[in-house]
Image (cartoon, rainbow, N blue to C red):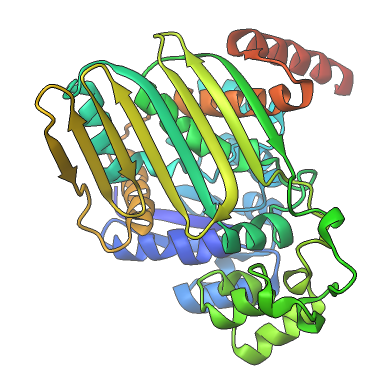
Length: 424
């Protein structure tokens, strides 16, 4: 086969600025031939940046799938609630699929995708669990598998979301309302749980989770504040100020706010849109902190902490072994191992890349293309299990109970079957 032809479905921040540039870097193996995007401004910019032919420009997925098959594969980067339906049709139409997480923001959608995968095993169907493709986590896995520090006993995993990123994404932005997208346990937790599963190398037996919307709520709005940061008297002392985040920090997230993020355009959209609103006056309901305890069948235990109160984005990992310990910082590309008997301390820097996040994104695109070219069909079981556990975590939060994963999966399958009977 020649170059792998790819259609991007969803030309937002992930589609346009994360995955499309990775494809360009492997232009000897693959090419972008089509785009599906409902918003005209995004669509036009994508076409301009990636030179898409007029006949392969689509406003929605229905139009794209009704057209003749124009690509070998699709990368789905739409809003969470569209993931299942688009992936389902793509598999049925014969496309290889790289699906942004979560696979589905509905439990029944996840169960259906599980069944679809078993029917279409001649398709490459992968989930964007990019962390698995980062040298940092591969090195952690090597250390565990080689038993350099003895038997793995426990995993401590902290997904530290920076205060400005959390305010942008989960308070003002696209992931702020769980009814439109999903709760933090799924939107962030599914990829974290996937890595914990990868390291534990065992099925999860049960999970207990706790979470709350502790800070970003209307109860913390004070009389001297204003509903828009541009009018607020206390804005200079507020870390979540939209003026500070979008006008002073010069971050990549500005591309998600405006297609042409000049100061003038940003000021205009902060005045008119949700990104300028006070963080205590938004319609958000997503937890701002969450803790989970996971117990695995091989006796390994793990904690998972996700919260939005950190200076920088980072993932911190602490592994406890029978003969040593390990601490690691993903974004700092640093692993420290300490051996008990020799008291030897070793520092490992697994990656040589300047940006470890972009490196992981590029690696998953490379793996996706390689699998298509080599007719290699990776297992989806771990991705499905991580999502099941994420849904179980949410059920644990709302029910205030420990959830046994096997029982939860069985009941989910039965409930899905009953729902299908009612809607047929």
